[in-house]
Length: 178
Image (cartoon, rainbow, N blue to C red; front, top):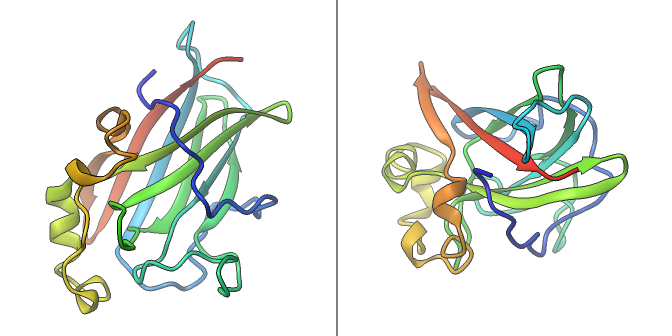
């Protein structure tokens, strides 16, 4: 299993919209997220799994919590025949005490079969954060090595990233038990 179970975190809001594009016009570096779901014992793709993501915007704000409204940067996709769920989003920002991350849940038949967080190489985040709107906030406070959740298996939850023009494509395989 490439991405270990990790804490859900405090900002989960159930009943996110089923949609591929979760940006809702939020500014930031475009990120195409490709999450593949496979059976952990057989490595076979799982069709029809619901993949639920959420993360903060470039300013470190989550939608739908702590006085913030809306549903930006939250969404669910069903996996295709290849076990793939794809999202159009932006590179996440940060908030004090945490490294840059995306939350993820995988649901099968109404049951949560995986809860985790996805991370970015610090070197890539450093490059992205030199540009607006990220650069307006100054240096981030927590890098991967100092993050208390990343310390619990985050290295195995690093997204594979490749640059396409000014955007990034991030991918990872999530192994789940049925």
